[in-house]
Image (cartoon, rainbow, N blue to C red; front, side, top):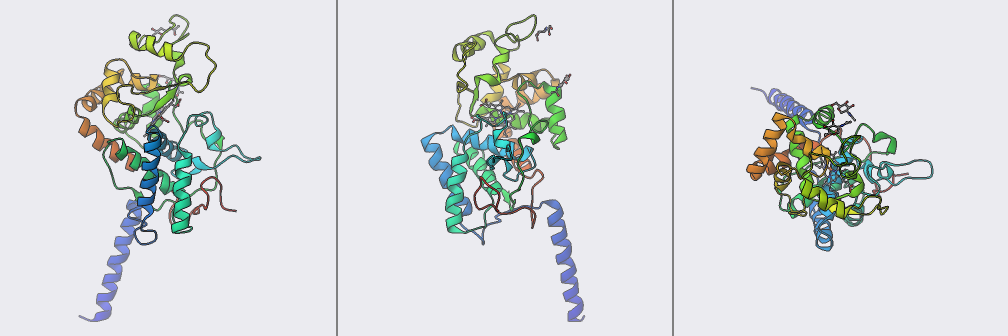
Length: 328
Ligand code: HEM
Ligand SMILES: *[C@@H]1O[C@H](CO)[C@@H](O)[C@H](O)[C@H]1NC(C)=O
Ligand SMILES: *[C@@H]1O[C@H](CO)[C@@H](O)[C@H](O)[C@H]1NC(C)=O
């Protein structure tokens, strides 16, 4: 056997392996191991500091990753500030004033630029921060495949059709998540993110007052809970900053009590309570409530999948110097 033949065989094998790797996933766990060793540590440190100041910010960071990935893929387009000639995603009513945690990303980015200039993308920072938030709130940790690059476009007009409404019914939700490549079960799993965080009254007050022509209050909402929500969200109160916890039992814990709440007719949005109206999704709600560890595992896996939506990799996009603005 001659050496050249062996070498070419090895080379062929390498090409095949690389090809399958790139088809499987454009992203890699440990992407910054050599290029910026402390990347994930620095992000975790900033998320942790923010959590100790305000534990609720972790919910904001989980939602930020969702809103980033569903609109133009996970490319940090959600972080870009509007300019005089462009209204960016973050100023769409779906994000402003409710989305929070931007300052945590800014702080992590500033430290990362100081440590390894131009290496770590804002999109990866958001993905790491969402995972760290889940861990800090006692969900299950997971490895984050990384290597996302940052997009150069962010338009509020991209949001309609790419983010769901809290008024969605189970068919709307199933269709909407299917459009993004998720099964109905993954949809039910991801909705469990509402086990942490808060909502503005404006996102569900339609269920409390003037629900429809014949009923003032949504009959699928537990009347005692509705009475409590009405106190927290008085009709006609013009304060747009009024908020309530979405899972009052444990608003800063990634546990399965979101599903237990739905079983008690205490899902906050129509899009939460509607999961009981279909037999398949109702069974998943019951199973998740009964076996929290199973839900946590499914949730972490679904977050990894969500984090790979339409990513920019290789030479596409850029590594933004400031997460709020595209490079000039
Ligand atoms: C199923 C369809 C979904 C709908 C209709 C929906 C809608 C909403 C709405 C209206 C809010 C309240 C915003 C506010 O008024 O302050 C909210 C909060 C939140 N959502 Fe969703 N969401 C959905 C799915 C998801 C998914 C898939 C995730 C993440 C994986 C997620 C994570 C969160 C978190 C963590 C909060 C709390 C944010 C905070 O406390 O700042 N949601 N969602
Ligand atoms: C939601 O589904 C209903 C039918 O169940 C449909 O009439 C409605 O147009 C859908 N709404 C949205 C926003 O997709
Ligand atoms: C109002 O909502 C109730 C409960 O969902 C429903 O039974 C009723 O048909 C609705 N009425 C109208 C006019 O939509």
